[in-house]
Length: 496
Image: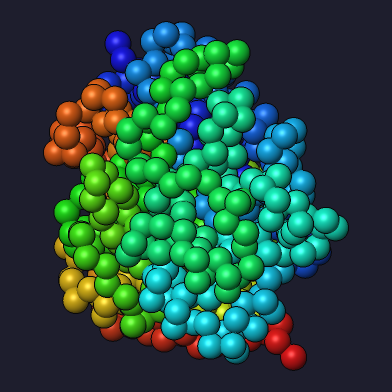
């Protein structure tokens, strides 16, 4: 059987899943790695831990499936986006820790760009807003804060990559420096209309072109795995950032369809088709995927802290011992008891774009319990997604018949039921929650002919639980009004 191996490199763990030719998971292995917080608002990873954990999960998944490298038709890669790594081309060693997408250290640099009038240019060329979320200012920070790096970068001695590029480099023994169009579109350096690194943006953000990887399509053989590694000689034939892979894996191939992925963050994407639409409501325009010489675009709303708020309840407040306990705790009370929790632990993303917002719990009384806080945390995730959907409706003009949901938190029935209530439309969960990996497998399989067409891939999508809204709309309007009041109070918190 021509198995496909998906490498799903996420923010808190590295996962590998072996898929059968019909898109069914056969076996998987997941390994968590360290989260590094050098200062308030800074988030880093050790790139060598990213690589070692991904390699170990790869070996574990193949062993669990009883699959040899020779049984693999292709390898697909999907990854946490915007996270920025710079390494030495000669030694393949990172010159600094990976600066994670959640990191806010370049907020002031973004303020300066905005003050200097760069916002319209960046918005028009990239579809993005100026924010420290994206890779461009992270690259500049590394080059300016590690002695000697800027000169070395200009001499071509260093390489930049998002996590997909770092994995491709290591999987090929340093032979291939490449990224795909979706990851490139998240850097603030890539022109989504011309399909090229933009010289004006490189000058604006002071990024040497010699650092940058080659940009390839999302499907088709890019390279082969080094013969000394597990999965030896298998073609790497699919690459996409995690949210783009999830959109593809959810079979949202028709313009107007949308999905939300509930992972560390929470990401809502709606397929646009071959023509980009610049948002007027605080969303991003991004490349959904690039296939067969044509580009499909999407609107995106990004919530920085989604499922990560549950990890914080576990590790920070310690009111649960494991993340899967949160649903039972939240369900032990009929509502949040008037408590609102705004999970802005890393600022607010779309549609608010407030780098200086911080998390907030408000509405506490003597009767408030851990259960009320847990329920408010889940409701906060759903309210953030509802805000994104409101903005998306304004931009696209489409009234969605349903939202397709995936990601680890989509197995939380209480959250999904409340999400349907907040949106006022049904929420259909994928039967395979990890559709980021599934999308990578679909792209890789399409690239080597395991799947013959996008339509064939859509036929493999399987629906899991479906949740219908039932709450009185006036009651939901009241709850959302209270949510907006809480949201207003957390805004601009860190700015003097």
